[in-house]
Length: 305
Image (cartoon, rainbow, N blue to C red):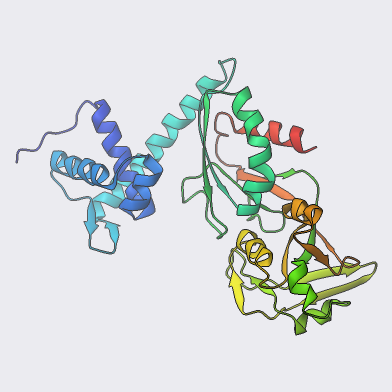
């Protein structure tokens, strides 16, 4: 097949180049297709067309892995610089608009999605209708820069260093809760150490370690490595299991406020609780802030004040 040198970039060329750099960054056609909002088949076709036009293989593909060739790695490095400049130029243009236009990509904890975005994002969307918000909910620790996100939302104290971090709302009260049915058949804990004789729903943090539950009463502090038959990766599943009488779970009080009010859950050790850092939105300080992100931060801080 004759090679067509790319001397003048068409819309198709730019789209295919961006498709290639996304696959190279994520090392996955499936993940790249999700990020770009196209099918895996269409993405594969775009990259193959680009390789045919250039006359050189850019990616090594197996049934399980994707990796750049030497030429592909060199091209991706240059493209990342070029597309970053394009992005910065478009961001600069937004300063001349009455309101921002563009897309914000967020990586958010489950708790962040429910405590921060679900109640307050509608206000932002209504106020800035030309800004699109792409949200990925993931409790794992993610390198938001490498993964192509503009910002993340995590608990304070877990935000990586070298990022600009903005506090959202107040510090959070963490509580242990269980269903009345579960507690009816067991002796109610009086001290945090009593949890060692109970079925607790363990929580694995985004860093992969099992979280030790923290309790404070005045000057007294306890850190309990609770036992449990089940371990979950987020508080969402823990709450659902507690509602199903599986055991005691540990979460921000705000996450279970309606269940406590309705009586579906009861607080365990109500005299013992722990105040932990609030949610923080964070973003890389060395980049131009994407269009709409400053406005999003302003709305969230306004709504959560």
